[in-house]
Image 1 (cartoon, helix red, strand yellow):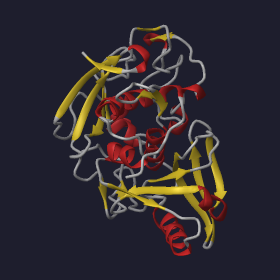
Image 2: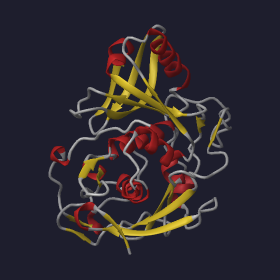
Image 3: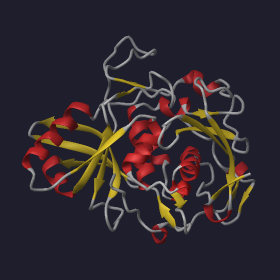
Length: 318
């Protein structure tokens, strides 16, 4: 697995100190990829606790919520019927290696004078919750930052990373065919060597969809912390170092991590629609998940970790 080298903390802008009561709800059915802010994606690497930006996790989160916005609500378990900013909230993630489902309990600190959470006034903080879980389960356990680790963590399914060479015509044609065939239903993350984030090596970015007719297709990507961009495939290909996808190109249904039907080779029937086909636009958030209590996960959880925010943005068990 090739690790993605991430941008340094020097590229993180100043954050605004808030109290937990000033934050917005954990999530709201709005524009979820834009919720994933640079400030909320700062994490600490082991063993020296240097601070970096988790572009791998940002891309995985964006890719999944773009495919199924309901993924947010099915993998966040609220302590009550409302997304209370000061209440412990559980975030679902897959454990390294076994990919067993794990719930990590995260609570915004009552006071954040140094702005270490990166959560700003009235902003959703679900990205911070997943970042905290990822930091504890993966980064602090010596797992490398990579598109593959992030995608496996957030889906619970094995992922594969393919390294590309700019002069490999056969690989280029296969990659283009796979983008056209799978991008709308199965998550694909690019490792780009040139991006608007000025990463020194490569930067994970989510593929949202494609358009056009082969061979002249366009690829819509979400550049982390910036926005979506449509790029001609022939212009994009030289900048792609590698791409990561679910090993079996599973259709992403957006169900809970650890759920047996979270992904499948065929699109499952959408309970809110009479059609089994996937759509280029994300479906509306599941209203029953948004309004109902979610204390109990709909699958067997092997580990529960209690966390709060520590100094310098480092997670610590209590």
